[in-house]
Image 1 (cartoon, rainbow, N blue to C red):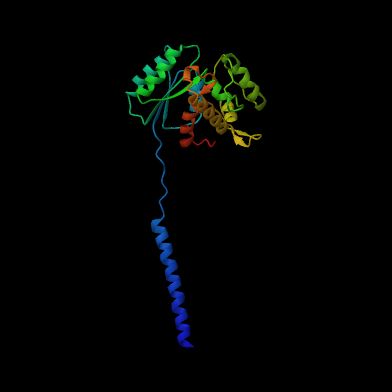
Image 2: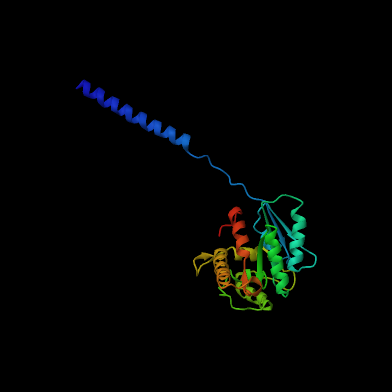
Length: 237
């Protein structure tokens, strides 16, 4: 009997010892929490206040956002970006510009030159406000004159106590941004993610059809830059 008790005690000690070793090994092998290093981004915007005020709302400390104030054709934006990008080393450089009424040649030349410089491009055809509209409706690429953008946006955000002054300040206010980054209850999805999905789908349709960006009216690649911001900002889509 005594031998049996001793054997059981030894087995108990062995089990406890084994558990202790496993806990020790787990503690030693558990990966230490790491903080992902945010890349430094240079974003040069062509627009008058809208784009810059929008991206600044993400409060990404590693992003420098410049607003180009000279001649605003897409090629001038890229040339300005080249100058700014030489002053400091950045992990990513982005050009943000619109088709507007600029010629197809200028628009396509700007995109090509940006790509030659290893810059990323967030372009919109016709303008940046199209990206904002996609937070509320799926346009499916139907042509929409940009003169209608302001009214279209306000039809969605005014009932939510926000306003966009597209003919005046052209600012994305905190109230407007709160709506953009809010949740669509009917779709059961964040508005930002809805816009990303819609813009990505439309962009893919144009590329598969072989339609160049200058001819891709009601299309935007701003979603690509927003995805980069979301990865490192505090905004949760």
